[in-house]
Length: 280
Image (cartoon, rainbow, N blue to C red):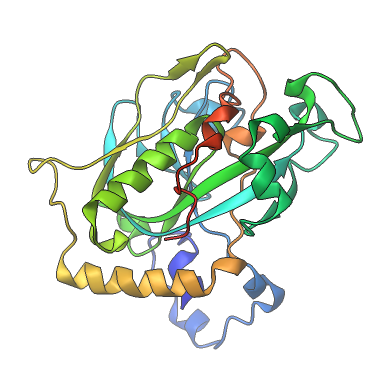
């Protein structure tokens, strides 16, 4: 059931009868891992095919569905949240080493501890030693929210992952706070996400997503009773299969080249003492 809920639909067409008549999909080892569709915010340093979109556009991968353009918003319901800790190779090794060197869901692991400790968050890469932090490996905490998007027929009933890490870690913490303040099942609420002007600090600028509660003119605050039951089943399925979820970070800001609009900024945002990384 979890596989059916997570994997993105390739088109809006029904499966032909002759395909259904062939029986079980028999996917073999493909069934071992679940790779959810994912929200990407296009950065100023984006390469093809994302350089065709305006900076700040929200796109669902891998179906390349535009969700919102800069200044626009969309409605969503988070159905499950889980943190993941990563060891990311430096951008200078792109094409030589995989972007993700190590990854884990274990909150007691060295990866998790170092991601939360600013003094130990960077480490020289064995294959390409450097004293410059921008050319070192980095320990990163990713706050991953599995969300159902409202109003997009092709994604109806298919949760996607909204991942917050590095400079956007604070946005993930803000969403976690909004959810907690509802004092209800996380999959009961409707929220608004929007993109717009870039965030800026001393290191550069990047585009992110801002999550807020809806006003009555925009949307109801809560899902209806039918959706509540469906989203509850999704939550239970995702929770049971969490260890098989493999978020594809290849097209996230983690892997985009450095530049004036570098999204590889403000890693210190992940060092908070709050419990936003706790699994919902």
